[in-house]
Image 1 (spheres, rainbow, N blue to C red):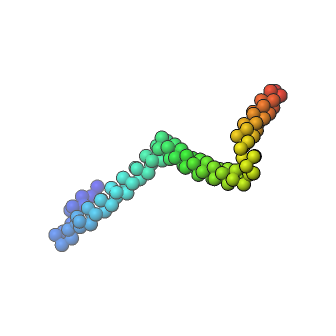
Image 2: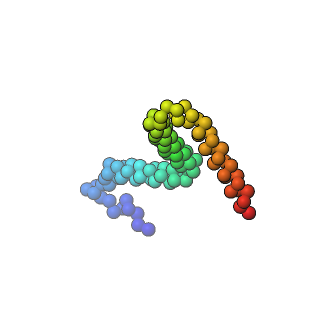
Image 3: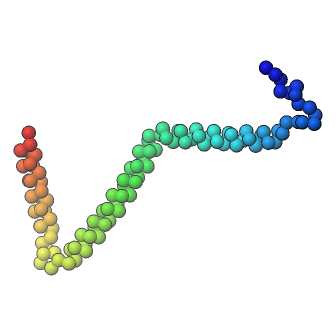
Length: 107
């Protein structure tokens, strides 16, 4: 193996500043690569991120459903509006009974 120092002459010194810049750049790239790999393998962080997205979507849908519900309720005539809680309870009971009957019939 040749010794690189033996080929250097005083008129051709190594550009240490340029080498330091390249080394610093390489270190930064390596650090970014390692961080990216660690982030990809961090399942807890990924799960938290997805859960946060699901929560935001659920909150948006809930707000939309509430707004639509209030808008629909305001359009109902007063006697129906007063009975709306009974109607909703009846519909919920009917849905549960229907689900239980269907579940009981399935093998």
